[in-house]
Length: 307
Image 1 (cartoon, helix red, strand yellow):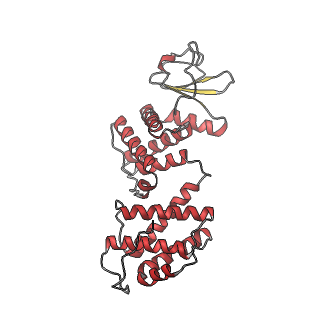
Image 2 (tube, one colour):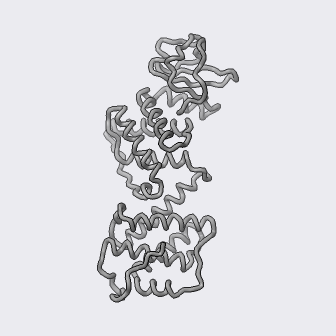
Image 3 (cartoon, helix red, strand yellow):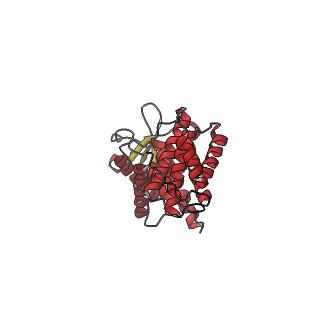
């Protein structure tokens, strides 16, 4: 919730007092302006002059229902939580070099307060493991990890490890210049492909391996090519036929990926796209199970690096 404009001039009077730390004034256009700071609203009443030196954050409230929700949130959430989140957001802005507006901060305040309330009630949110985020969005993931640590340190209580995942998703929503839901949709599809491969191989993949990182990036680019209708194509099918017969298990898994993509996007993967999937899956298979899969040609060469 970075400062929206200059601090209020001396003589500014209070319009409403939300609590001891948050008050509302009216600007020259009659818009409600939220001002925050420790003890800022203590013993103040409407029409009292406030101390501008106590103001730490300020922003203009939305009109209508959105503004009402923001006002209620700032009234209900303990100020230490608001303060911890706003400071963490300021640091994330500096780390990413990207403006994070108040909508982002309000969403994180709401999220963190909800987490704390559930923890206080003895309800632990199930762990969410999305290692793909570290590969696809390392800067946002790193900033989210730092945000979670800073908030926990400021509040003096630990937060679940999965909060870095949730905060990364909030950051992606706030910083990606894409149509609403595009990044989230691509990510869900990528996760489904990963799950399909893991189920086909019967293992959990090593998310820290270079082969896993290459696979994740390839699937990301494949899904993006589907959106932009720029799929890879080749008139030479010999390499595809070689991979199809040499790596039958990886070919079968690639066919499952193809079926999922068809159902999810109504797009048909080309043989060239499928070839890349087969090769990446086979390299992952070799990572977790060096022995040749049943039905494979024992004399076949290891899958080549195509990227």
